[in-house]
View: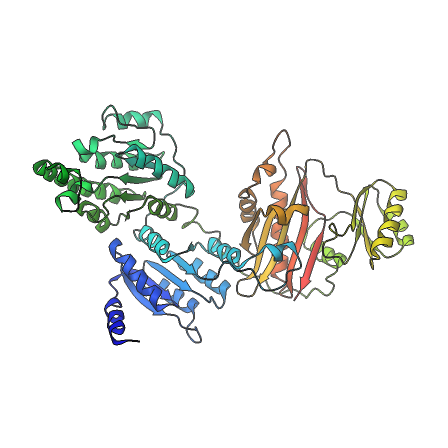
Length: 560
């Protein structure tokens, strides 16, 4: 490295003291994070370069940072997790915010998948699922990592998603409301009592429904910012507050940073406004200190003295609206609080010896996954015996085909013996399969087809996938992921979070399906898969869920 660059790196590497433990596999990224964190008043309790983790691992360092009293948050840049599941377990147990930036999440697994679950599971899905379950804030860039660290530094968390927007200009308020909703927050209209209370603080032209727009009152009375923010933080119907727009401009003007007071030449008025703004900044800091609710500020003048006052009080201040919204989302329950948890793997079970269709059915049935009556047959006399074993209508499947429906290897709704025999002869002539399955046809009335599967990731172990199933699984790609095993309560959360969740709750006169039954099957299947390390892919597709229960209609497993 050239001498001048070496000296520059040494100057940059004097990390400001603070509460962030930075664990990074990139020295340059660590330097960038140091530079980005400085304007937010963020410093570091320790910095560790991970290297290749041949001796000390990422898990060791997270556990050490969790024990370190001076560390309030853990920032990680990792290109190689090593044992990814152990990372998730350590992060979940840390008791402190963990923020992760990682590279290479968008690549599809190189292994040739033989199931829908394997084909639809990418590295990005696995990492995101592990982070959600462990309560880790996953970010995509150093800039986003800085935003989230600034948000989590003060320790405040919102109990819900209801956000109040306060502004001194309608445009900023509307843009901030849109950004908050895009970040997963909710900007509700305030109740009548709250609006009446705000009317006593503001003038006639102010808007009080939410966003709350001071409509220029801040220029007449800078204390209106602090009064309004304090009132909003005190409302029971509000979980968090974002202040957006011009705040900071008055103190910036007198500091030579530009603003209307300086431009108009009203030096005396500008000084009074600047002094009032600094006073209300301290007032806002007091309100935020007394409240457990988060306050985030977006300012056109983030370096103004009044904004620096807020930063010194632990209130995050950002130049961009989208950063303020992202910060507030990081402080809201559901991302940074209340993780689903990482359940330990069950003890290994006796290995599956028969990965064929009926072998997998038998394994899953033993774990409590319900299937229709079925018989495996190879010739027509066995077919006739199956007809006598249970009533129709019947389903006929050609076995040992990767995608039976695509190959014309499934015949549904065969009403009687004659129709079943005819279908068997036609299918056998065309496909010549080694064996077939004759099954009782399930009642599809008011049913929704789901897919439930587990794919074993080389870093994170068994990863569950649930979503809309049937023949359109890959086309619709409406799926969700979690580390397996998945408890029933978490399974219901995954299902209700699907884009097509309305189908499960009943639409256009159709009744709601039995979500509890579906969740129970998900728990049983994912627990079984987690206990079988020899299975790389296993899925039930479709899992038929009706108002009165759930029934697995097809299953597949792939051994390592």
